[in-house]
Length: 145
Image (cartoon, rainbow, N blue to C red; front, side, top):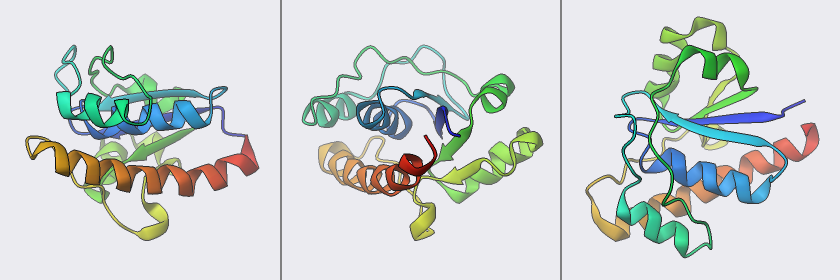
């Protein structure tokens, strides 16, 4: 059974908070969190991320970046990353997590491109891609939650 999801990206200010918000909206009973491999703890989300999420009626403005820590990988049932390189890095740092780390676009064997500093259009495009990944995982999660 999947009761908790951890979404991971690089800085925890764009992609993972956006995915976290979408998962929370779809699965209000699941514990959902996010973190960054190289996050500067305490940083707010990128303004463009806040804006595109607001268009989905999801407010992430109070989110603050957190650095990925070992306990997070231990306590969450599923760890979703944005890129293949991030999957390898999470498993390198936390070998015990192998088997529960997957890309958000695992079913497409694709990465979610980082929109940071690329403007509103890039953030909207990234949100559309993240929504596709969340939808694909939602089908699987409905079977095991």
